Length: 239
Image (cartoon, rainbow, N blue to C red):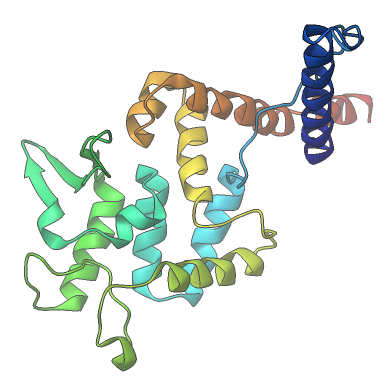
């Protein structure tokens, strides 16, 4: 598996470095110069959902979870925002700009720029309804709060959001490799599945380069392989 390949690659790197040093010190020839590291397929720690899995999760959430979760899952899937970004968003981060409604996020540190995502019709309509349900608020208030007296209706925690996601994921049979971060990978994959360019996925997810975004192409290949499986075609033809 990938973990074993990474271990092998690390060991080979150590061995190559050692014999390179022995040669430099005139202690022993470099007998490891021809050793090659195994190729490791670049993949994500957390899995992205297929369209079928996503719609199944949304269907379950609509029947079994609060409107807050229904809204959050849609925003995560339609925008690819990070878990912490949406939790950290305040009402004054929602800003109209021409015909678009933008949700802004502040960059971390000096090197990360502020960025935004566009809230399209479905996530924005759910957000509007959720805001109506929440009632009166100040511009600097958190958008999503924990409905608990213990939390004084303060900002919802990452732990609670992950817990709510696990409820939905386990209900539809997704293992622990699927987390809230899976929505981010799901959004990237869906851009590619919809025929979008890597550049568009990069804009959506805020990646500084296309190296990370390129992994979505690999993930999509497996989704398409299963979706258009030639074995099913043969099964129908031969039968």
